[in-house]
Image 1: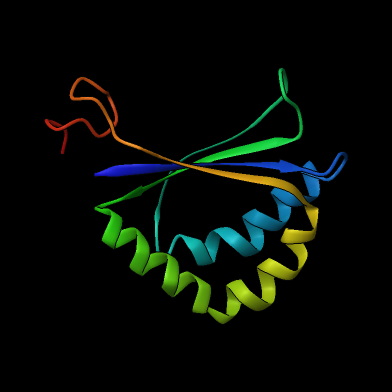
Image 2 (image 1 turned 90 degrees about the horizontal axis):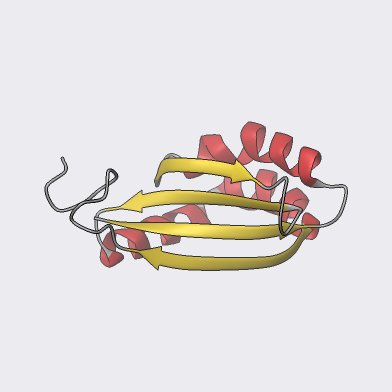
Length: 109
């Protein structure tokens, strides 16, 4: 099991609009392909960011599910055209849980 942490920097003043658009148009689509573990937005430190974590069984599982997402008409036609212009920057990190982690360590089910 591993996790993908995605950090998006949103254009100044667009965070509320992005959050609403993601909740209404992005989340229903992407959750067909990945399990949402966490979703945050910043208030202190580097501002105008949203951070979300997705769970996958393996790198192969992620690759298959991302390909399926990128072919989904609802993602391509309803989410991407509005969401992507609001983005300044995207970052993705693949994370593996330590054995003692409360989320996803080897001994967790």
